[in-house]
Image (cartoon, rainbow over all chains, first blue to last red; front, top):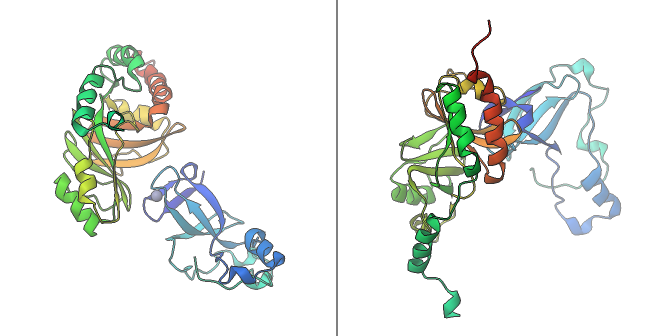
Length: 118
Length: 217
Ligand SMILES: [Zn+2]
């Protein structure tokens, strides 16, 4: 059972949380300019890194707030959690050796639309 | 049109009529709850409170909306996780989220039109005040073994070092989402939604069963 530190409530067991996938996927700045491929990538294409991953969680059984977390997908370790609207904290990967070569940044999704930050 | 429109006076009058008819969500388990208190010799005493006032409030503490609500309540809104403000035996406010609170008055029964004053105070302001008295059943658990009963199915840390008297949190008991308030040294109130009350009372009675027998060492 993971212990997840909710930014509002502090550490609670994983059973109280709901997973929400990759964080910081911004809504397209100009949705009308997207072709089908652009939409597909916005809706369905997500990073799948081995290592640090910014993802959304909701404290479903507690304060019910959504928040973001940096979690290592290899060790499941949570580096930090932060409120929606706050920028991704600059946290070094605690297990850099576990990450594959090459960054898993939005540059991996070629026509990923530019937008604001979530 | 007119005959379908109920005035406040009429709804209050019919509320008084309904007072004799309305039933709490776990009313059918009253006898079982009383029995476990007797059989455990008070180690775990369980009862359901009858229709306490429960008002859902939404506002950011420090905002004009919060000030308006606090003016009517006469109790400040709590500002952080686990906090309860006011009188735990009367009107108090439980923190649920940074902008969501549950005002509870356990000293009296809800009447129709409850919370209208709070609603009026929010006129023109962002926020919300809703009568949620029928949303949750309020179970009162008292006794020296109650913490052990709760700990069988609660993932939150209920040790006094992190869950002192006067703490309330939203969490889960077994599979049931609840608000849990420690209002006295060995006194807890559990708020399951009404449709979960039957299940949760039976769960509590089952968890309390071991304290109804002599300890085997
Ligand atoms: Zn929370």
